[in-house]
Amino acid sequence: MRKRIIILGSTGSIGKAALEVINALGDEVEIVGLAAGNNWRLLAQQTARFGVEQVAIGAESGYDGLKRDCPSGTKVFAGTAGVAELVAESEANLVLSAIVGAAGLPATLAAAERGMDIALANKESLVIAGSLILPLARERGGRLIPVDSEHSAVFQALQSGRREEVRKIYLTASGGPFRTWSADRIEQATLAEALQHPTWEMGPKITIDSATMMNKALEVIEAVWLFDVGPEQVDVLVHPESIVHALVEYCDGSVIAQLGPPDMKTPIQYAITFPRRVPGLAEPLRWDEIGSLNFELPDFEKFPALRLGYEAARRGGSSGAVLNAANEAAVERFRGEQIRFGEIAAVTEEVCRRHRLIEQPTLDELLESDAWARQEVNACCRR
Image (cartoon, rainbow, N blue to C red):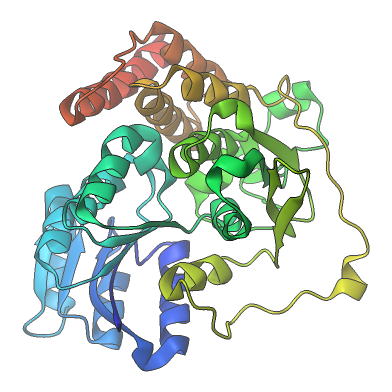
């Protein structure tokens, strides 16, 4: 069946890579909707280039400019509710969810409600509301296909066995720009230094999360939801070459690994074409140039954010929503040069400690927890 796709976050790094992939796939995929957070100018250009009839801009202030610059007859939605409305009204059968942060949750829920397949690049949706999204998707017949390179790798490796045969999942991490730094030096890292990722090209928020290793903390929680395993079954390995993206160890001792170049176009294409594989845009690995692959255990003392992820995964309930929101707010403070790099995890941890857990939260309670955590970050920073 021909894929009719909506790309949520089309102006970000994942969205732009997805457009390259879809352009190369030709008539196999039709783009029926695009959405962005606030870059309405680029969104208007993408709309015209790909002949998209329905678009949405998350920032309502961008509505007038987007409406003016889009081709005549384009239906334009605005606001977070507008992005979800785009999903609810479209004729898509696949949604690529790549809006960064909690802002992507309403549209992801709308896709699950409609029983659409979801190519999930927005890990925060499951971190916040995995207890709501996964049961809803299963009930409505939709599939969640991970796009994050690590979770895509696990998803592929799991084709070699059954879930009940899995002993351990290993998510790899590059270690970010501060892998070899001392704890004191990391504490004082500048914004420019935090944005210098050694292997991946990503947006600023995700790049900073990689530097703190909060991205891996969130990925641990996401893996628990996606693959129905306990947090004790998910380990992190630091792998600076970023060639092995994940490994799955089975009960008989066999370990299946997925390898590939550090290029997001590969997992994006796999999610779009699954279960088929087709020729892709990524350059093949040159084994003679790789030389060696290295692995080491993460340093939880230097990167305390990773520990916070395991704690939230074990506690469950509303803890993931609070962890994610507190981190988002703290990263914004760091980007605004209001706190030091080392204070991102410290402030996030303090907010998590203050939170009163809701074990089986509703959506409203998750959103309230999200809002509370952001307010607490502001209060912590003032103190």
